[in-house]
Length: 217
Image (cartoon, rainbow, N blue to C red; front, top):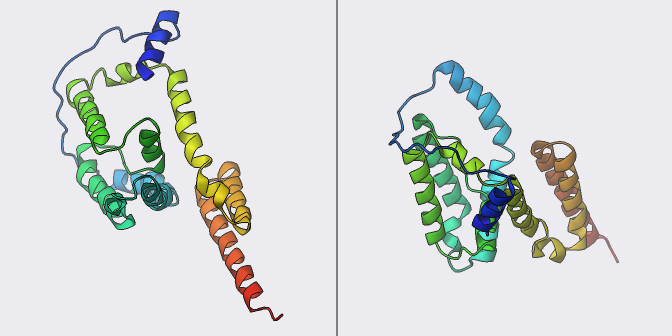
């Protein structure tokens, strides 16, 4: 589907194939950040991600794996996701890798478009390794040849699935205010405020339920 959309965009002039492709082996270089770079990365990269990574990349991803792959979901436990994310960043960041994590959106997208086994991740990883090691000078141009409209359509479909999941419609009515507050805070402010607001709303919901349970008569 993506290939068909890409060729259609090329034929109509909405996008164009890369003008030149350079093939050259490029190996990663070990380089530790200096203290100034370390503290800048911590303040501008790590701290802002704290509200998002534990939720989307760990809690939601583990819950989604249990829903989509119940027989194999034990491998994607919260503990394993935390360990693999931390180890990947510690080991690969000194070689210039971007910060990385798991993500519920990626799991949902791969499942939505047909992935049912670990082979999908192997194929994706192989393609990315080939691009990084053999086409580093042309990787950006190759990816830019894919029309943004096609990518946007795929993201819309993949993002709509978790947003309109069964969990939302099967939630108890008492959960709806918590969901609404969290979603509104995410859209209007940022994930950090949404996390705090959602947690406070959930605590208020639990307190109201406990109070109703002990109310006489």
